[in-house]
Length: 307
Ligand code: R5P
Image (cartoon, rainbow, N blue to C red):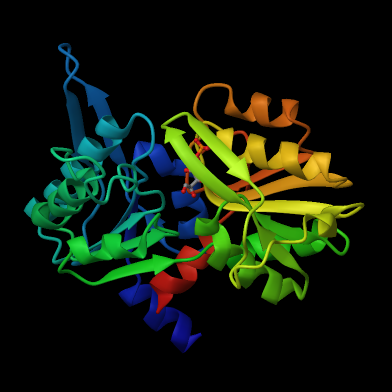
């Protein structure tokens, strides 16, 4: 009882931006925390208006993803940080479940904007004192900040889902970038894993091949024959990566293909196209709100915030 009372005194108030309302509510419930009410509307000319209506503590948490519409969600996040600072919050912990603009973390062609750097700078300069995200596209994104940063992982909840819903699966990464992901999940589930090779031709076109594995020997794609295959990735955007991989897996006799991934960016009709390619289940998390956000990261975020 005493402990509970003490915790209630130090526990923080949480604000959910409009992009992360469900997740905020779940995190608040896990923490036994209060949700601070805010008002969001538009001026007649389209500009955004934000008012924080609840009480403010010295320490506050904001949860807001910056997925589509990215610019709008980002400006909302910045307004919330700035307003909390004006209202006297000293510690502003920003939870960005999905880091929109995080995929342009370097110049691929001369003259390009490093948008991930710009966004990081804006978040920090506006007043965030801690930055928390999940499965950042590159961990090096954290280097853009000088405040403490944390890159949490949704892998435990994804692995739990796979364990409950498949029998003796094989885990497949659709590209080499998913290698750490596949290995970690396969280790938790004590099952086999392989990965394919992908070359991105343009933002919405990829080519996928069966090539060398970590030891540079050709992967044995026949391992998928007759198996329940689970494709895992950090992001699904257009769905091209998953569709190509599914075609290869089906051609090589996979019994079923499920897709488990963290960030449901899901551009246009990506979900339909993926089902159309023969995928059995599409399972994303709620770092972004979507029709396939079946697994929640609330527990992972809440456990971290409790520390
Ligand atoms: C890329 O390296 C990522 O891990 C994903 O594979 C990629 O973002 C998926 O994009 P799309 O669904 O458009 O193929």
